[in-house]
Image (tube, rainbow, N blue to C red; front, side):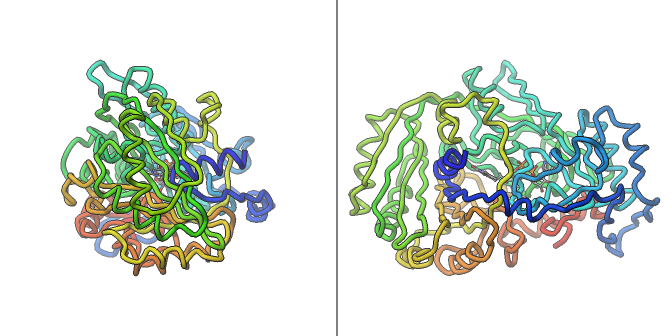
Length: 498
Ligand SMILES: Cc1cc2nc3c(=O)[nH]c(=O)nc-3n(C[C@H](O)[C@H](O)[C@H](O)COP(=O)(O)OP(=O)(O)OC[C@H]3O[C@@H](n4cnc5c(N)ncnc54)[C@H](O)[C@@H]3O)c2cc1C
């Protein structure tokens, strides 16, 4: 299992040594169960006309209103459902978990949370890096049972908000269609889309949010709307999960599923400066069909590998890989190039090639620390990146290419702001020690840029709102003030907290 996960992370660009220790997760857990109380959210801003809370949340009344299930800490099954994917946050014990089955259930939850000022968060795939979809003592609006994929004859697809990416890929592939999205099979399409959504088809077909046509949303006043244009629709495309409302369904434009060739080149220890330098020049001039990442792994000295996906044949790819090798001046110690269909490629990047789809959907919680930067322009000092991770252990810095279709969308066309970036840079370490990740992330700002990717949300991120949203921050703040004036969807790095 650990070996599988390590392989997945490397292929997917997360690249960490997944040294999850069961003891670390267990150490965070509480001995007892909290009672059925809930912490209240922050007071509304003094300028609002919000009504005073009507009292503590009435879970009995909420349960009676729901078609789905409401789990309280005393209920059997609560503990299994409450656990977030990142077990660094295993100590979070929600006051209640609403396993919604209809948009009306979601409306009832939002109304209950709003009226009682209870912290509330939607949870779809549960993969928030910071555990934000599992608010301690709050209400979880769990959309896992609202998972469905409907592929229409015109090639559009309607996805229930609780759908995991692997189920999206499998259902679309069965119809010869695809959606550019991420590599992890158990990530929710909801969180992924709302923060942008990058993956192996991103340079060819854009971010996941760029393919969004409509979103069904329950707003902070508990009304249900469908957003197809205007400020809400603009903000949902990159403004980050947890803000403005709870999405219950997404409609996407899909693309024809391509046949692809996947590849991996492993370079010797000590080659990081040369490989990073050659890779960034190479990918900067590559066609949209070519997506790639370059992962530098800590060590003494650090090592490096380049992987990726080409929407074309192996015969067309191989000369390009030869060109990459020439640019690096380094000799790979291993090189694999394999042609395959779209679904097989998604299973390959998920580290699931030999498993049935059903087994890929479920991910065991694991502790990890991660953060990000954006590579705004080619780095001049790639040796400095290698020096940052020299002598460390179990930490990877993954450069995931952007550009292509991502860069042809105007910065203000959607809330996702990093349109001009060459790559997303992720710093990742399995385990419970955040310090090395924060040190490397902080030092990288002087080498690559100060931006960061909201989907790699980092509770320790300095100046987080500016880093995640850049030039789009003021417009997002205005959208949050308009759609959530009472700060119902408050969380530490939420738009209503800026
Ligand atoms: C192993 C792993 C691999 C990853 N790979 C990629 C990748 O390849 N590409 C990429 O771009 N990202 C990737 N990510 C990051 C991923 O996109 C984010 O973690 C994303 O937020 C997860 O979405 P979720 O629905 O699974 O998480 P959740 O924890 O359920 O939600 C994340 C945030 O969105 C909010 N939210 C959830 N559902 C809704 C909803 N229906 N409406 C409104 N808000 C909602 C939550 O409250 C929370 O704040 C990866 C993450 C992990 C852990």
